[in-house]
Amino acid sequence: MTRPAPRPPIRTCVSCGRKAAKQELLRHIWSELGPVADARQLLPGRGAYCCDRDECRNRLYKDSKRWKRLFRKT
Image (tube, rainbow, N blue to C red; front, side, top):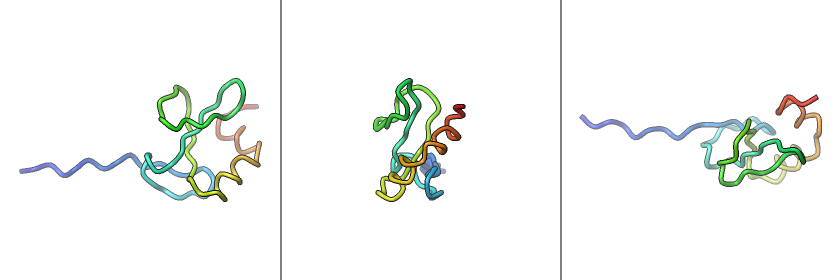
């Protein structure tokens, strides 16, 4: 018997809620300077994923309250 191919990890866009494979979304982490895009998905820390679509990125970058909620910052 052969094993089925493993499924890719699924993540949810924090802006629109669309579910997609981890590799299709852009990961962001929080640094001392604020949110940082982690294109290689290797930086340590809590990550938030966003679509590569312009409207999702614009909505995410405009809303500072969303960043605080995502990364539990006060």
